[in-house]
Amino acid sequence: MTTQTFETGTIRQVHRYLTDIGYLVSEYAIRRWIKQGIIPAAYSGSTAYISVTNVRRVLDNGTPPSIAS
Image (cartoon, rainbow, N blue to C red; front, side, top):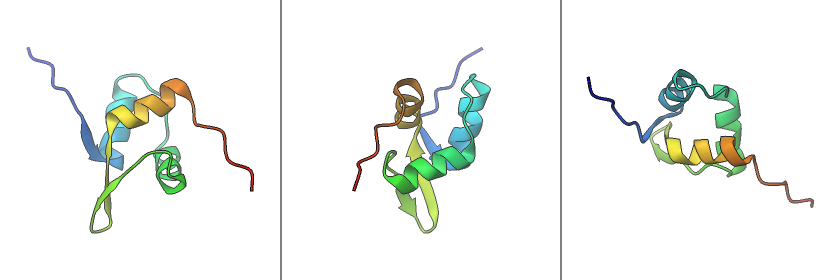
């Protein structure tokens, strides 16, 4: 049996992958991090594609502190 690696996908695909491997994160949180610019996304039409590595980095290290205005 081979193990597949998963690198990029839609928000929903990345969310499902991460929850399957044991991360506790909501789809809403991922969408919010994209909107805040914490996680970069590439768009094709209205569909956002993100990297699993970028989301795992935020989950493992936490979000950066917000800049006070």
